[in-house]
Amino acid sequence: LAKTTQPISMDSYEGQEVNITCSHNNIATNDYITWYQQFPSQGPRFIIQGYKTKVTNEVASLFIPADRKSSTLSLPRVSLSDTAVYYCLVRNSSASKIIFGSGTRLSIRP
Amino acid sequence: EAQVTQNPRYLITVTGKKLTVTCSQNMNHEYMSWYRQDPGLGLRQIYYSMNVEVTDKGDVPEGYKVSRKEKRNFPLILESPSPNQTSLYFCASSFGTGGGNQPQHFGDGTRLSIL
Image (cartoon, rainbow over all chains, first blue to last red; front, side, top):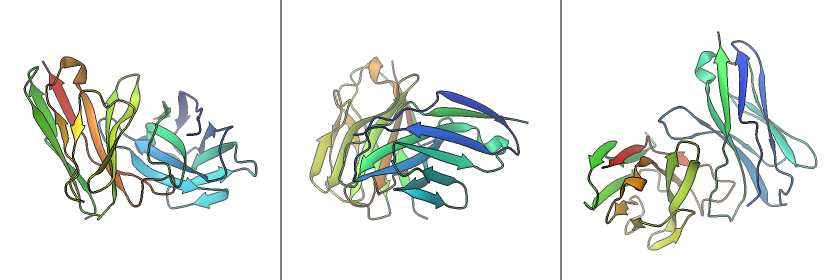
């Protein structure tokens, strides 16, 4: 299981674009990168997943450089409701055990 | 609606009194898993199951049991609960073996207090 490193916390303001970077230096060839969002006392919710380059969906974009040793979750025009903890996971397609890191606590201010 | 359902959502009980937290999913997922979440320790995997009658230990299995007799259900059993098992518990499911390319779907959580 690849170890991931994220900032413990980040602050931003409504309407701003927020980028959260996850470092995974020992990522393996078959590893995928997945981001989850968790609100207090709720289960994590899948946001986005990628393997390489860029992935975009209705809520976020995921940027993965060519060496795949890091990834950046981009949240466009955040609102107060984006205040949550964001987790980056790196696992291969056959890995059954799951380890969540500490995540990044994102606080959005008016 | 696709969902993972846990029951009960809240439970206060006493040390040593056996309890079961149920988890059911309606997505025909092969993989199911239990986590506990404690302040400062994040989410830790307790047990997981890749299919019916196939279960394996996660990072913190001590004091817990699970069973997977049916594909949709994955109950978590605390045979003799102790106060250090007071925590917020989450059940999750996904397609396949739970590998990195299969996102997990989480339940709403069960808050257990063991006195």
